[in-house]
Each structure stands twice: as structure tokens, then as C-alpha cells.
Amino acid sequence: MNTPTKLILSSIISSFLLAGCGGSDNDDSPPPIYDQCSLNNELNGFYDYMQDAYLWNDLMPTNVNPQNYSSVYALLDALVIPEDRYSFILTEQEYQSRFVAAEYVGFGFASRITTDNRVFINYVYADSPADIAGMTRSDELTHIGGESVQVLLAQNRYEEALGAAQAGVSVELTWRDMAGNNHTDILTKTTVETNTVLAATRLNMGEKEVGYFVLNSFINRTGADLNSAYNQFDGVDELIIDVRYNGGGLTRYANQTASQAAGNNVIGKVFAKYLFNSNNASANFIENFQLYDGIRQLNLDRVYVLTTAASCSSSELIINSLDPHVEVIVIGQPTCGKPVGQIPERLCDKRTFVVNFETVNALNEGRYFNGLAPNCYADDVLVGDWGDVNDPMLITAAYHMQQGNCPVAVEVYQDVAADATQAPAVIAPAPAMKLPDLWRQEH
Image (cartoon, rainbow, N blue to C red):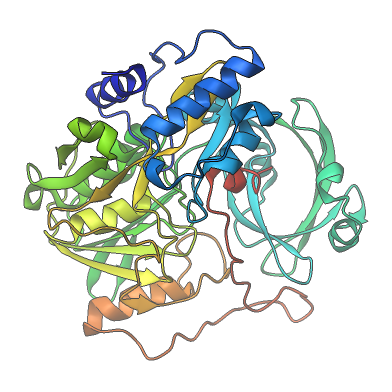
């Protein structure tokens, strides 16, 4: 057996260190695939690894000479097939920061930019400078250092105005809330802890008590974050899992999410089958539903999941894996379409996240490269903070719970001050498909 194959098997055996979009759940990393880190060795080593472990290795171009490329990033672009929107490479520092330590240096908010150059807040991390300043989901960022955001974007100076990603950098930000009130504060960048459950609460929908939580990623801290959420849901009638911005991550936590929701209805049954290329077919294996770090289980026979085109990979795995066993009602838009995953491997001072395997459920259903279609369509509209009763996705979920079918249309109500210039409906733009691109929306 060659070295890359051994490392794949080692990664699988070590607590299923698999990633729908990349990651490992501990710091005990395997030694580098190639212990010599000259550019030539890095290029040749990565080329050999792709030839052996890449899921679509038989479709890669055959006329690529690794020595013709100035970086391993350029070589990756040359080798991946056109349909591969998912493979990427991180530096070891980026990997350790985002996946292992679950942190980055910034203000602690993520944003969306509209076609008319307006910036709205998608979410805010708990206890970050943005959170402490009072910034919240649906606020509009209007000025940076006294300059209009629209002007900064038009002049391609927006990122520069937000300052370098260094602790201690201070910037004056002005934002407007949904009531039309303006706020100005000086925020100083610091190390932000990326809580993976952005919100968790109990909602009353008609005669039903509903658990609702927003799961934003699957990284090392997700197991504990899931327990904090599920501890609030004892005795609920229904559960809504909101993964509208979740780009994926560790598959074990997709399993934990689903297992805690459906409990005895699924535990011990097939969660997913992992299938590698023909070189590594001996690594194929079946993973059953299990709690992993989970404690409380709800034993529900129906689960609601809220999605957009940014719901990717391990988020989709929750839906596809639960579907053969319990009723899954998907509300929102089609998902990104990533029924494949990566095993992060060390390459000198980098981690490669190339697609190594595909997943199918207990019924051998997978290959949803066009995304998983929702049962009921609803837009991701900014109307307030998480759990706002006017959220079209929550309105749609509540209707389905009470009526058993989808509404013809969702009417969105907003109580916005008359002098506010906030757009009445701010819908998410098409997202990036790789986690590093999604992280760039965070500041």
C-alpha cells in the first residue's frame, strides 16, 4: 500500500476525521506527507498525491508538468476537473486557526453586499467587538471611518478601509438598525471566537412548541455548541435546524446534529457510506448514526431544515442521511450541491483539502451535484435578528407544521421607521462554494 493511501486510512480510523468541507477534530495531525519542503518537492509531492487520492483522478488532465507551476495553488487549479468547485489549500496557520482553535482576528461580523453596493450584516459572533458594540443581524453598515460604504465599494477601497487583520487595529464604523436608528462606534480588532451555534431558542408556532437553532459550521467546538443548543429543547414538539449559511466541515458533527435530533429513530442505523476512488476502494466504509459528543437526544420523527445555496456539504449530509429514516422537511432554496468530501492532509506548511470521497445514504442516494431541492421554497430575507417572526423561512415552516403543506406565497411584514432607507427585502447573493471564500465575508 502506498503512503497516501496509508494516511487516508489512518485519518479514517482516527475518530472519522473527515470533512464535508474540510477539517480535523484534534491537533494530533499525521506527519507531513513529504518532509522536504522545497518548492520542487512540494509540487511533485502534491502531484503524486492527486494522482493517487483525488476522487476524480482518472479524469485529471494528463499533460500537466508540476515543475511548470510557480505554486501548489496554481498546480491545484491546473489539475482539478471543471466540475470540482470544492477543492482548496490552506496554510497550516489558517487551518489551525479556523478549524482547531476556532478563531480569527477581526470585528466579529459577516456581511453581504447587494448589487447596489450596500452592506448588510448576516451574523455576529458572540462576545466579539461587533456584538459588544450592539451590531446585530440585518443592520446596514453605512460608513467606515466617516466615508460612505457605497463610495468605498465603488472605488474598490472597502477592504482597505476595514483595516488589516491584526489585533489592535481600530476603525470607526457607522451602521443603521431595522428601526432606522444610526449607531457609530470605534471597534478594535481582536481574536474572535467563532461560536458555531449563532442562536438557539424555543418558539411558539400555533399550538406547537418548536426548538430552533442556527448552526453555522462544523468545526472542533461544534460538539459542545450543539449540546448547549439541544439542552434547551427538552420536550419540544418540532425542531428547526437553520443551516442557511453553513458551508460544511467535520462530518462527525453532521452526524451528531442528526442523531441528537432523531435519537432512537436513527441511532445505530446507517448514517452515510464513504466511497473512495478505485485506488483506495479498500478504504470504503459505513458510518452509523451516533451521538459522538452529544448528550441529549430528542427522538423526533420529523425535522425541519432551513437552507440556501450556501448550505453545503455536511449541512446537506444531515438532510440526505436522515431522509431514509425520518421525515425531513427542507425550507428555503436548493442547497449548493456537494455530495463529496475531503480529508485534510499535511503538505509541508500547508493543508490540502482536495476531494477524496463521495457519500451516499442508507439507500445509496447521493450525487446531488445540482443541490437538494426544498420541499417549500422561501427566500432568505433580512427582517431582523435570528428567530424573527417575519422571517419568510420561519413563516413557511410554521405554515407547514400547521397545514401539512407549503403556502402559495410568503408575505413579509416589516415595521420600519418612515425615514429609514433600509431596503424592504434584502435577499442573499449567490454564495461562494469554498470555505475560504465564505470566511472572506467575515471581518
